[in-house]
Image (cartoon, rainbow, N blue to C red; front, side, top):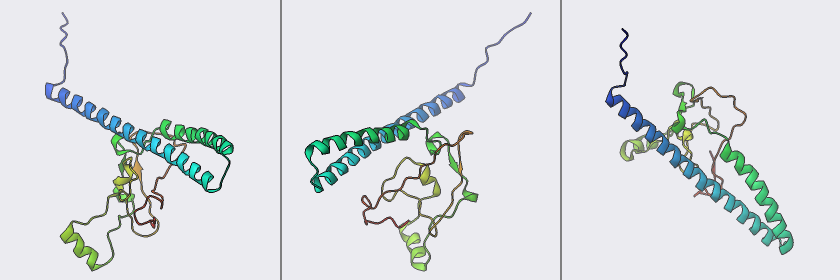
Length: 180
């Protein structure tokens, strides 16, 4: 006689896995919502800039409307690619930085910077900052020198077809420059 027993995970492990899954879904929803806000803002900004440029150059209203319609079509095509392509290099999806093979973060060169770090808890953002879906001013990875390299461990084996590097423009930089 064959006796079958129901196999189950211990309750604690099951609850932990469920909690982890819920947290992951919640994070993905937050990332998606943030991305949607950024996409909408980018679209609105592009159209406003085009409108301002056309106005500055005294383009006739009829031509302005036609140019804005064509710009809207172009922006939609760009944003479709931006939104519809998976971003494998996000910490929330499991991407990590290989610290051993990545350039060092900028930490300053002189004694004053070192002293400030002791008393004001000044520190540079780590390389993992680039795995966050944010390009707000100050939320960047400052590295030593004018060039750096980073090794990102992706959460799955993928065949990359495109790479995008985001950085704020001088127009939104509080100092008006983007020296790094």
